[in-house]
Image (cartoon, rainbow, N blue to C red; front, side):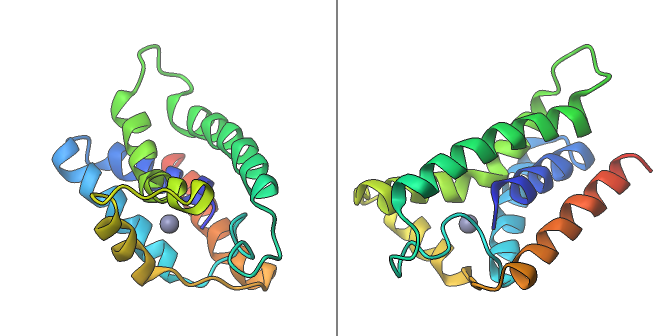
Length: 150
Ligand SMILES: [Zn+2]
């Protein structure tokens, strides 16, 4: 999945359960669950050569800027103090993809990350159909924004 729904989900879990013992494993668990839903993201097509690595990295960096802005707008706006649990929860929401990035983009995988990446890979379901692949992600983001402002 895209980083936006993963990060917003991790941040949302942290907003509801502000203890790291809950939101860190919660953010990871939701990441794997979300990756299990057939999805389209900037990495779709990398393995088949339909997407260049440099394009995927550039799009991902742009998406991270948008993700940062969305977390700020949805969760941090209006708070004078930094909501550390929100930002850490958001980071944990995208951590499985960060852990996998050196393998995907540099062909470098430290041995201690291999089990985590293999576990992550068990859940991954991609689709080239952008409508089917983006709809659950758009719904996730919309529901989180609605719940936060409820
Ligand atoms: Zn993932």
